[in-house]
Image 1 (cartoon, rainbow, N blue to C red):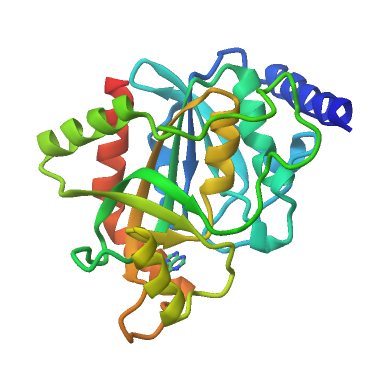
Image 2 (cartoon, rainbow, N blue to C red):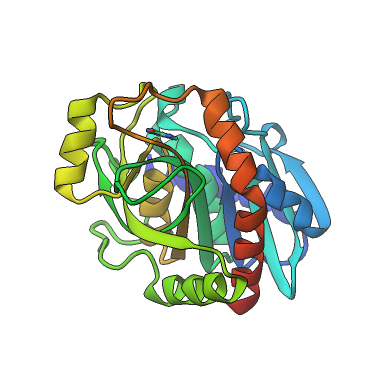
Length: 273
Ligand code: HPA
């Protein structure tokens, strides 16, 4: 089975290398409502997920389904416009397949973005938050199953996987741009239902600042492949507190309002990496 995964990865890598010559060193996953950053990529080459061997396609509104290769400043980048979620019914292994392809293509830093519900009462909708650590509440892992040896070890460390250097860099960039950047721990709930008030209270007691339905599987896979990770959440709503849960349309709307700051923050951070 491990060999099968390796063969599939190699097929996907070979297909992409047949189209894109430059080796990307920065990977970007664009979260709900944050896909606009892709338009800042210079000399873009787009490849639909549906054309890449063994890639699955996203089924969620606000998530397109393509890889975009090109340049941001002097860096070769690849962006996923549209991500895969566990709640769509995909396996954890399917969700992280693109990350493993990124690793084999030469990606050294992964910037993971998402829309999230705020738990820290000091947060407000529209805030951006750099992720300092995560709590995996899914009871699942993309690394379950035979270990893919070409990617990483059987028992990888998950300590300091959100690169302290990247966190420092993005904070400096935010200060320069006068963007208020929060920081905190991201709790992963598999969804697709939003949290109960009791669950939000539990996550707060556990030390989480925000909650969302993505990111953690990809980050675990990136850490497994020794890719440095920078995570940024857009707080689109407050997760608890007696309000109604947000609609997905509201999540997309708030994320799109924060998108201008978000885009400049990420672009300038890539320049400083
Ligand atoms: N909970 C989980 N995921 C989310 C939320 C939330 O409140 N907002 C945006 N993504």
